[in-house]
Image (cartoon, rainbow, N blue to C red; front, side, top):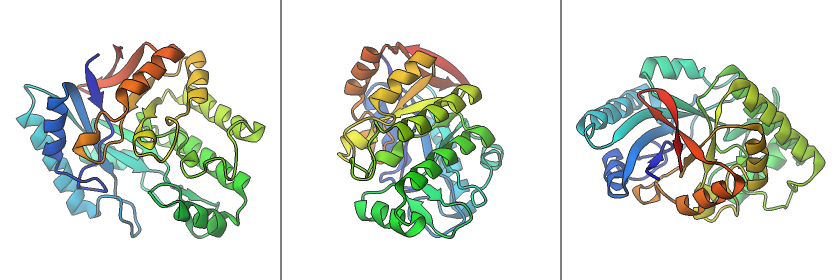
Length: 281
């Protein structure tokens, strides 16, 4: 099948490499579509998101220039991966309208404990940050913390209506069966509740390969057992590498496609002139 990637981070946020380097890599690999999705600015100090409105405008201008430059050989899309933190983050529509985005990816990387201070950062390379956040923000109460994550994701897709739900179960990345198991009834109930919300909102679920090829997780996001439940319910998917370097744009793609075929999926969702279409394997 012809390839595409809609989840890409360049040096405008926490990726490495100029955007054009990603386009060149995509062309070399035979891609028909490449979507850039830098982390949208957030209103607090961090080392992962676009820094401020001036950089955001520069990012948008750069991707639009690439759209024009390479329009004859590849479809380049302008998007943002937008964090949702209720009461803190901006509405997705503000970014979508002001930046004239082709699509949005909605993700949760920082989990809030109600009105309490502090955010639990569940991403990044440091297991220690995950452990410290669980202790400091949720007092080590893992069920409360995991429930907060899934409720935050559910609230995001209900109120912000992103086109794509990013890394559905990212909460598991640094767990490694230390704090919870995915076969525990309470955990499965949270997942099933979120799947019901996915069906109601019609959001496309991203199958994200980054955890595997970066050796931070031994499963896709979402995991195979969740993908099987999704297939039963007819939930549409897209495939992404969540690339942070030009060499990563097809990371673990061949293996992931084989897994998806084994589950019974026959197509992936991709965007074409802001219209979502299904592309057969």
